Length: 140
Image 1 (cartoon, rainbow, N blue to C red):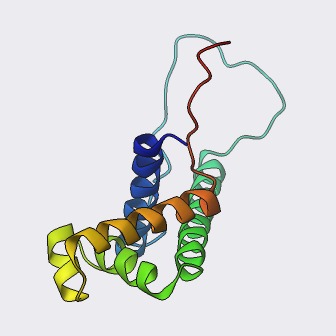
Image 2: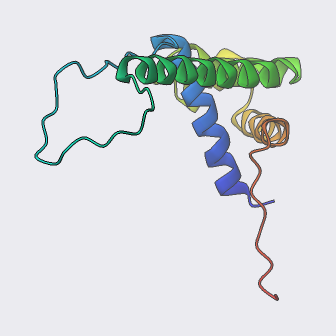
């Protein structure tokens, strides 16, 4: 498994989860209510198309996608070991702008042990969330 791209994917998933939990799930896409005029004649397709309905559908779909992302990430974090869970929650899910060097003393861990446990937690999360990136076979 390629560690750096895998770690980056897991970090993005965790930070996106925190963002969705903080700002909420609902996306306010507004329907276009002003008419659009065109010089070309309108074609008759006999199909009903409402911009309000399609906008509402986009809002519902995006909200569902966001809720599912948060559910998947929090379920994966909850399946980690107790210390791994504390590290991930403190560093990525609770507050903005929490840095690593502020977390490990708070949990009474040495720096080395903190990074080893965090790396193991990222490995497990990558597998649970199916975010792992593998090396490409260069011999092919």
